[in-house]
Length: 162
Image (cartoon, rainbow, N blue to C red; front, side):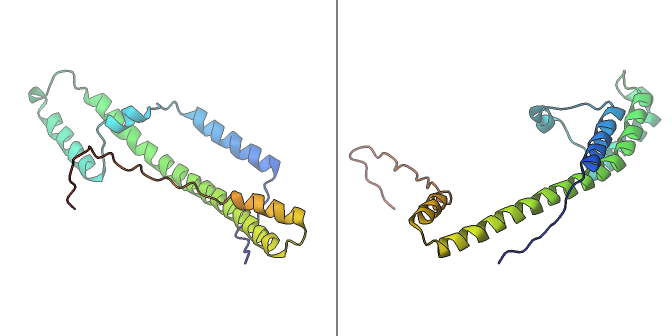
């Protein structure tokens, strides 16, 4: 049975305003972009090691003659402040992204479920040869290609013990 999970219509002006808002947000801050390889290999900071890192920095700040030259605590403080400032924006953007993804998912579910309901009805009620042929063609769209693993080659004279 078909159930409509979401029913919405976007007004062009609202979509334009949303896109403009996102564009404005993207342009408001100059942010770096990492490629997937760099992102994977860079050391990460999380909840546990963030507290540890901040403690280490404070101990280093208290003992400047024991740390490597070139460490600039003013730059470190700017990084700490900027990270704290980015967090609320990240939370808000993730929440919005999740809602966009949920909306897109529900729209896709509605499209697919109604298509299946129509398909099953057509399949049950097809009377003419042309309609049955069309339904048969649609049925092929559901066929899955099975991937079978090739049998491993066994050299002659090899005995296989299970």
